[in-house]
Each structure stands twice: as C-alpha cells, then as structure tokens.
Image (cartoon, rainbow, N blue to C red; front, side, top):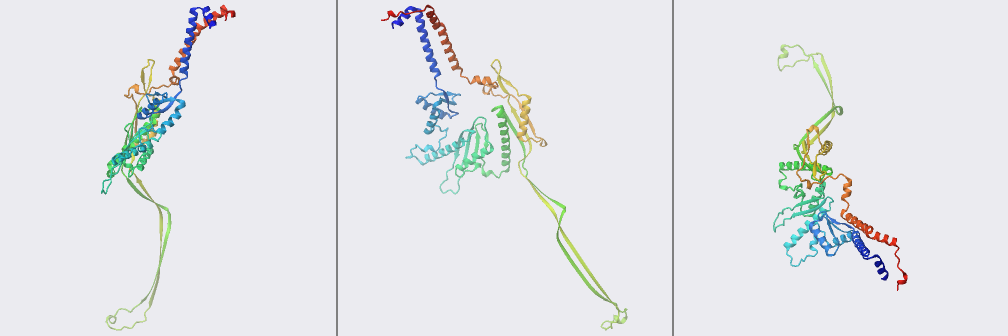
Amino acid sequence: MELLRDIFKKLGVVKTASILGGVGMVLASLFFFVTNVQAPDMGILYSDLEPGDAAKIVDRLKSTNTPVELNNNGMQILVPRDKIAELRMEFASDGLLTGGSVGYELFDKADLLGTSSAVLDINHLRAIEGEIAKSIKSINTVQSARVHLVVPKRELFSRTQSQPSASIVLKMKGNNRLSANQIQAVQALVSMAVLNMTNDRISIIDDKGTLLSRGRDSSASGDSVSVYTTMKEEYEEKISRQIEQLLERTLGPDQVRVEIAADMDFDKITTQSVDYDPDGQVLKSVTSSEEGSNSNELNGDAVSIQNAIPNQEHMVSGGATNKNASTKTEESKAYEISNKTITTVKEIGGIKHLSVAVLVNGSYKKNEQGKVEYIPRSDDEMNKITELVKTAVGYKKERNDSIQIVNLKFSTPPEEIKILEPSTIDEILNSIDFRKLIELTIIGLFLLIIILRFIKPILVNLMSHGTRIPISNRT
C-alpha cells in the first residue's frame, strides 16, 4: 500500500485521477465487450407456425427463462442454438405443436364420465377432421389444412342414409400448387377415412379461393350440359394453373395472371370403314357338276287318213331311228377377298380453338433517391415468355389458336411487391448484423482513445523521468 501511495504522490493528483478514470473506463468497456460477444448464438427453433402454437411456445420459453427472440414479423422463433434439439423434443412430447388441428389426442385427457353422447359424437367428428388435416399437411407443399366434414346421422327405422360430404381448405407453401394427381390423392385420402364417402362429395379450395376440386351431386350426373360445362372449366383452370406455376418460378408469386378460353368439341362420332384388297384373294371353295342325257328319235310314216282315225292299230313300219347323247359339265370357284374393317371413335373433349391471355407485371427496384420505380419487361424477355406459353398450352397454328401476352403494371402498391436486389454485394450486406458490428467498432475505438490519450502519456512520462522508489523507506 505504501508503494502505491508513494507512486500516486509522485505522479500527482491529476495524473492519478486520469489513471484511475482510464482504468475504470477500460474495465467498463471490457465488461460491455465481453457481455455482448458472449451473447448466445441464436438459431431458428420453429418457423411459419400457427398463431396459437407460436403463442404457446413463447409462453413456455419465457416461463423457463430461456432466451427467445422473434424474427420476420413473428413468423420465426429463435432460441440458443445449442438448445434447439432439446426444446424440439420437449415440445413434441408435450404435444404443444398441434398445427391448429386436434386429433385423437382430444380424448387422452378427457373426462368421459358424465359426458353426453352428443358431445362425444361432436368430439369424435372433430378428432377425425384433425387427423385428416394432419395427414394432408404431411404433403411437402402444404403448409396448413382445414377439414370440414358433414356426416348425416341415420335416423331410426330409415331405409336410406344420406351420403357424407367434405370441404377442405389448403394453405400452400410459397407459390406452390397441387398437381392433378395430388388433388386426386387428397380426395382418395378423405374418402377412405370417412365411411361411405365418395370422391364426388369432396370439394377442395386453396388459400386464394381457387377451386381445385368440385364436389358434384350424383343426382345431377345425367345433366350433360352441366357435365360439359364443368369439363370445360376444369380444363381451362388446369391450363391456367400450369402457366402461372411455370412463370411464377421466374417472375415471382402473384406477378402473372392467366385467362383461358377453350372451344371444346363435345360431339361423339363413330366412323366405320372397310377396305378391300383385290390382290389378296384366296380360293375358298370349288363346286363341280356333270349332267348327261340320251334320246332316241323314230322316223314315222307320212300322214294319211288311216293314221288319223282313232282307235286304230297301226303297224309300225320299219323306219329309221336317230340316237342323241349329250353331256354337260359345270364348275364354279368361290374366292375370298381380304378386307380390313376400321372403326374410329372420336370421343368428346377435343379442342377446336384455344385462346390464351397472359398479363405479366414488370419488375421494381430502388433508384438513387431510394424511391421504388417500375421497370417494364424487355422485348427479349417477353418473346421468351411467349415461347414458353405456346409450348405449355400445346399451341397449334392449324387450329387458329391465339395467344396474347401483355406487360402492364399491376395496381399492387410497390411496398407489397418484392423489390429486385440483383447485386450479390447487397445480399451479403443485408445478412450482416450491423448493430453488433457498430457496437464492437465503438468499443474498440473507445479503448484505443483511452490508451492513446491517458495510459500512453503516463507510461512515457514515467519512463522518461525514471521514477524510482527507495527500498530503505519500506517498513
């Protein structure tokens, strides 16, 4: 202590205060630096959760004092990276993640004593809806699903029973769309999960209100006009969805609008033709017949009165006799000529004419003033889009198909449209945490100023004067 007292007395009050202040500031800066650098590395625990599930997860994390952050407008939940696997297993075992759908776990903790049969029937229907929704969500392009079942209860002594029906609402991931095979798979899944359910009683729509599958009433199956209209609408919707899905991969979601007008042929024509090959004749049968005859002719006397008297015996005179013999032979041959019968059946649903209208939005980017400006598509880009659309719809010139592709600005506000950022440097800069970088820079500059302003002059002064403390004064 006396050594420190002598050093401070030698330095003076001003230098001593400067040293103590500098040391204090250095320690405070080091403490702030260490606490910021040693902040836990956060990773994504869950993303794109249902609001109810996200609220349960955040409440559980806060109750256990686990560091938690919300990112991307609450769509992502971040926790320390080393705890992600542990927390996921914990929440899965507790059943916190239901995805908005409750299945048969509804009966796990239910008190069935005193529960009426009506409540049990409702819960059973809810459980079936939840289990079907979970199965549909297992498709990698489906984010969430809601299932509504109508299962009529058969009345007592009733001979007939109404068929059940189902309505399904799907929310897709990004700009994904269900293919025709996937839609049929969803229908098959629901029809096999519910007793007496048929595919024509299942309707499916997506989160944009697009009808993916129309449930039809079997009583209207004989209405040919309705069937043909539905066939035409489904074909037009299918082609529109294919074009939008193709172009949105490049232009982005909600940047393309497609309308199809198909003129379909619903006349069923059966044509039968027979072709004969005269060079391909084959002998089928041979018929032969032979006919022979013999005759004797007697030369009689001349006509007289005696010969003309009846009942008179005439003496045959010894006249000459002529003998005639003839033979007739006939032969007939029957030939088979080879022939080919062709039956052509022209089914309904052929395309007589196809009209395609495609509306394409331009791109947006920020100018030097930071304002968003609209950029039309180039002619080369529009030509490529035209060729893609022609190939996708099966364009045929002999049908006089027409395709019109127009580039116009959509009415969507620029704030809701993804701004083009083609520069990879900008993407790298956006991924940097500038807040932490600025904090570290300020701390480093602060430490450097303290060292150069306070500590370095003191050390230089001490070394230049050669301050020495006599050992003899120590007690």
